[in-house]
Length: 397
Image 1 (cartoon, rainbow, N blue to C red):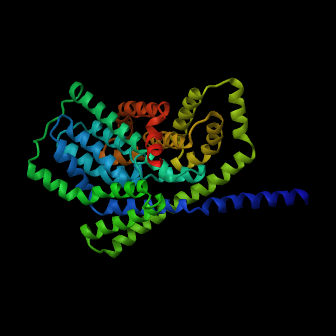
Image 2 (image 1 turned 180 degrees about the vertical axis):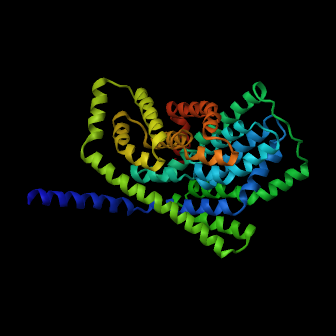
Image 3 (image 1 turned 90 degrees about the horizontal axis):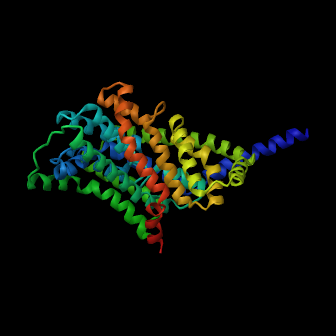
């Protein structure tokens, strides 16, 4: 009888922790940014966003590859998801590069690698989940991801420039006229305001990160009505897809929250940190171990599952070794996002391989070279914390 009482007490405690986890104002940001991304994907802004950098730098050697990276950086400020980036922009990007005579495998690789910027540059649904678990500011996480996202873009473009001259004979397209540039800028102007509105609203303190999600939904609806008119069946389909994505993530979060409670209750994080301290492992070695562990997890589990399984242990390690939780959040997001490029899970690999019409093995080979700039970005962000913390510190003073 006593054992049964203890069991029910534990059961109540577990479900109580789940209820408390979901009783969070910050968690409202998750469905809001998901809906904003879905609406943007369906509003026809992707072609406008693509034509803008295409008119400016499309004529340089390997120009379309640079355009893909820049477009992904811009779209990241709207969707907050690598999968949304790959699905929304991938078709346009792959087709444009094929039409211009680019190597198919290279095209698939750069499009998939560029999509990795999606969850890093704000907003980011991955960062929202981490912020709620770690009880840190969503706004600071968003701002902290800005410079790392730019670093990723620069390194991918640098790699592209390197192979454009040494390995591939990329074609050059004619330089756009001033009229074409002005037309592309005019068409892209309103969509380009989306990340500006979100970031300015958050950094100025006019809205919270959660309220900025609501603003993003309203603005996305405005653009959808402007470009597509009012189409109720289409809007209903958009909201159904957004609701499905939200529910799917919610159930993963629920299961992983219970798992996290069990792990914490068992004092596994404390045992791990005590063991590592006993070995005299340095902070920099811990960061390396965190990266390796998260990269391996990302190969086999979804981002949300990995987050919720690993975060309780990593929070204890961060506290023991003095790792800033904002810094840790960006490191975790980038590690697990790279997992979308690695088999066997690798959701982005499956999306892009279908768009490029190549085999899965060829898709994996196409992506491998682009892991070099992405891993270099990860090392820079990991071992130079200022790349993450500088902007949040400056804007909070």
